[in-house]
Length: 399
Image (cartoon, rainbow, N blue to C red; front, side, top):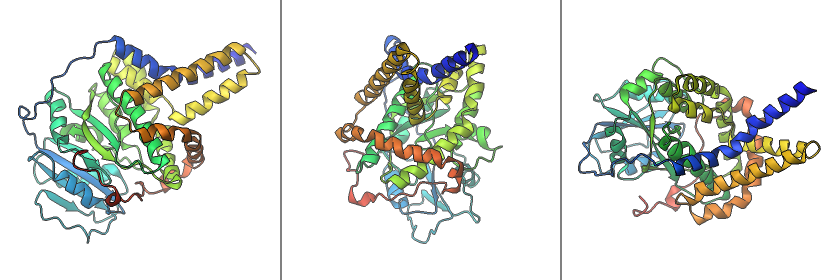
């Protein structure tokens, strides 16, 4: 009986600390004076040579918009490589010589295969590469802001992905989730001496670091960013975070789209969370804050999973311990406060706040995603986008 009680308490501790962790990071960040980095001076930052890799799988409808956005960058030293994997490229015609359209002879079905397909066909030896999704738009100073971080000595940088569309409740909740993760897993984690987690796009690296990290691997399915960030941290490099390098990302608009996308993401966590153990213990034994904190974050389950498990623990304790119920209630209050802090400290659209009432429905569809997680990689390697950006383009002031 003692063993069962010990296991039960340990299980609750493993789940429960996730409710308190965001707020604890916020308190630590508030008490710690963040390291001051120089202000952006675009005129003083040298224009390094960039390769912008845009990957598309089976659909190219968003390519003209993303290319138009990239060609409006306030920057001159870059080339755009479009890797159209298993796509009909007959509609892609670009007169600008900075745009290179690549169509692999065979289907790659992998982000990293697409990236290296482009890398092996670079027109010139670029210093940096940045990865953009086929549904993204970028701010005109995107590359300038990345340069600021690279000039500080970082070899990997994660920008911020803001919502391109808030046209449905699902899109708004998807954006709220992104704001939460960008704030805690990006801004706070980086400013506390660790690294920002990678988000799949809106990220940049030295070409050499990217090759050293992934060229010897064949990463299939979703989650190449998880493998990449682990490789970077194991080299004791830090991934910088900047909320000034802005990419506008298309958010999920329909429930079926949400279920398929989340099933891939959940599958990714189950496949790669093991990397957190290695980094956590390596950081613990070497007194390396970067690896220790990052490993701790990698071990955290997806948001809805630990919230559901926490609810289950609290309900079980109704029959076991009133004190434990009170602790779980406190945990939910602290977590809710931490979630609100992330939204309040960010430039959050009022529609996102209004959408929060739909959180139970959002969680329900993610539970459906969990039930389909075993077959997740049978779905397309990319989310099918149904939002028509031509009906609601970001205006020039937003960009």
